[in-house]
Image (cartoon, rainbow, N blue to C red):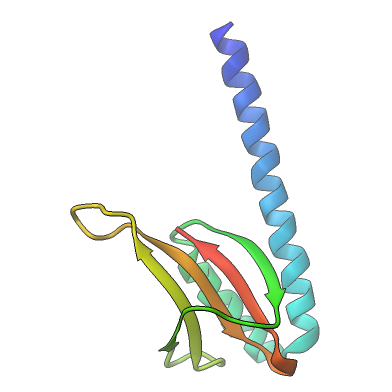
Length: 113
């Protein structure tokens, strides 16, 4: 029975991660329609850097939360970030939301942990 539970769990997690990747691809295709190739590459590089953590729940929004944080060296120059600490004694377990400003009053929002 234990082997079946592990097999079912592995299948469910594989499906879950596939859905997360589909969400990211679909939203990034929408972003590509709004920004230049240079800005898109900068956004994707930023997300890949953030992907050292876990990133998910991508969406386009009309509003942002969090506080403004400068991001020198990016094509978008700043983000809005709502960051929290998970309470790890080492202080390195942050999580929250990031909003990247886009043209036409839109923001790319995603979660990281």
